[in-house]
Length: 141
Image (cartoon, rainbow, N blue to C red; front, top):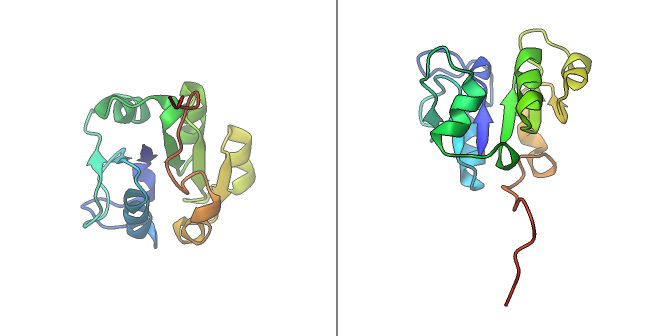
């Protein structure tokens, strides 16, 4: 499952950052279940967390009965990166709203990208390349 921060998107389903809609579509095409912590861009297949007052990342996991170990969070702020680290979700950060890469790395981001377009260019080498098999290897019989 990929959980993507509402901070990376504008309201009324209009993308706030170039490449944000494409990122959602690409994650879905690669087999991720995409959950947004708030409204996202039009035309992107994604579930949306609508639990007011709740921690949006935990609410997103609960929405799809997801485990933290099976998720990747795309965050746009130091607060979001820290929350992901607190509950054990690996985090890909996008330097948005003036936040700089070293701050995001210090907060616990596994990766930091300049913007969503930059992340799309290296998606095959990121945590979002493909959903991974987590846990012990399957036994063949």
